[in-house]
Amino acid sequence: MHNLSDFVHHHFDKSTGELSDIEKRVLAKAHERKIISTNVNAALQANASLGERLADSIARVGGSWGFITGFLAFLVVWCVANTIVLATGAFDPYPFIFLNLVLSMLAAIQAPIIMMSQNRQAERDRFEAAKDYEVNLKAELEVLSLHQKIDMQVLTEIAAMREELGRLSQRLTS
Image (cartoon, rainbow, N blue to C red):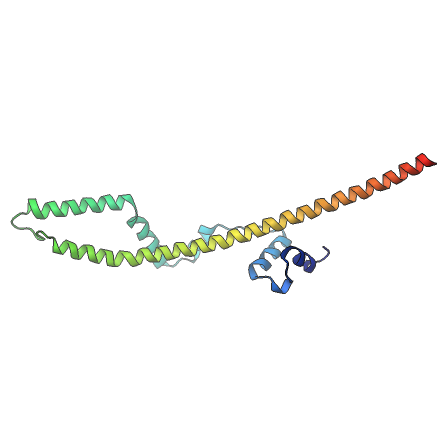
């Protein structure tokens, strides 16, 4: 392969103009001998807005065992306080209508925040998959390049051996 067009056609089975932006970027990085991998966490964190970081934090806390056990303890204390301790002057007597209101409001706020965080996680997964594809593509190109270099070296050595055999056979016949 003498030029880029031949290389692209041979390895990608398409012309240079048909390459995607990712393939062009990978080819350029491979040609420049530069790395293509990046820290996905740092790249996404740098572009995250305050709301996105807040949603991730709330989802991280809301989906933890610490939150679940703490909230379970809060519910037990609420129920015990309103049935046994404050039997005559309970501020939320059984069937705990105020507690139901609080739990409904919490769920109404927490659910969309967790969904925002899940959407960000899906975006992160797509970004990570794209980066993995780029790194894998560059690795394949580098392996192909190494194969080509080794093949050229072997061909050069075979040609040198043929010349040497020719010289040796001429000496033997003369």
